[in-house]
Image (spheres, rainbow, N blue to C red):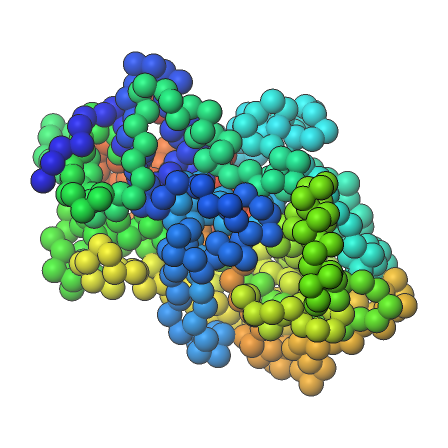
Length: 541
């Protein structure tokens, strides 16, 4: 086994958080950083064209190709579970939507962790630090950072009509969905630069890739963490990995930072002997640290896709049904970087309440001027739009567990969607609300007709059943290495993201979220990395 050298920090995973960490930590030229990525370079053309996510998800060049276990809440269906396997990680294949969540999310994190540095007024400057907002600097937004936030370069009459209908139903129009105002609708802001996807590799890593104190290794599969007994107790000293058919070890003098995501980080911990001891022993792994919370607390946003046929209005279904239409779409993007090829997977967003008794929105809509049976299928040949709605704070909890001691074997992902009565009730209410919006006067001229799930589902129980039929992941897994207080037996990391009972090891990615944020999860993950980098610099210089 060959040595890959000694470094101050080893970052496992060059995804959303790993690229930010590498950028921030190597600002100190006296600090040496090794960044390991299992995937390859982000030089695949379709990564950078916004609509290219259709070619990246399900592609072994860019996706881990995970699948969930068959889920009882989804009537026994198993789902694809895309996770980026390339520089930039999931920011290279995601929906590009910039969404921070609600201020109350971070107040909840602070209360649970006992650390006021997670409160909204403390994390807002971290969001602003990396932001380059199209409207410039303000009380809520930053300018000049690496992470460009732009308006979308398109509009659709059918989406404008849905927004009007939502307003008629009591969901107001908002100019900025990230203003923390709660209920409202508007077009999503996106992480693009003039119609081209911006991933974290391009934004944070490429500008610093030539720093002499940063070593980037792609195609490197981390098999396990390495430990020694020191005066600090059980201590992580580095990693063992393979690259190009060669086995390596690398040593971290300060810390090893796991940034492999909500699936990868708990998997690596378990393979290394950190997790529920009985579960590890079942796979022949000697426990290093008994932490039963590793891999538990999996949360995700389950989107309930409702499809409505329409008439008298253009949708992508009708624009892209022939080669002439496709050619015009291609020319529009080539000439102006606008139109359908610049589209994020969802364009219009809305936040609403499933019950008027709730103090804050608990539902998020992703509305699209298109329809298809399922991801990867061709568009329907009739004009239609899709209104997907998800429960922002589900009470269902799943888990991620290794299937064997083989580090190349995919883990078992069990989301347990709709496994609580509260989630089933919220799902039924969400579908009913969508029907009320679509029945509002603003959409009447387009004669919407429900295609999926169908009007045969009417009662609360029938609508909950329909939710299991049409529900699918919106690709927001979090929580599997959650942070918490010292007296919380299921907490994996403390409020500084240090793994409990193991020195010189942190987890820095979406897996540390104790509760999922009320919206898309990419921007909060960048914030988490900003905060961890700041903490590390404060501790080590």
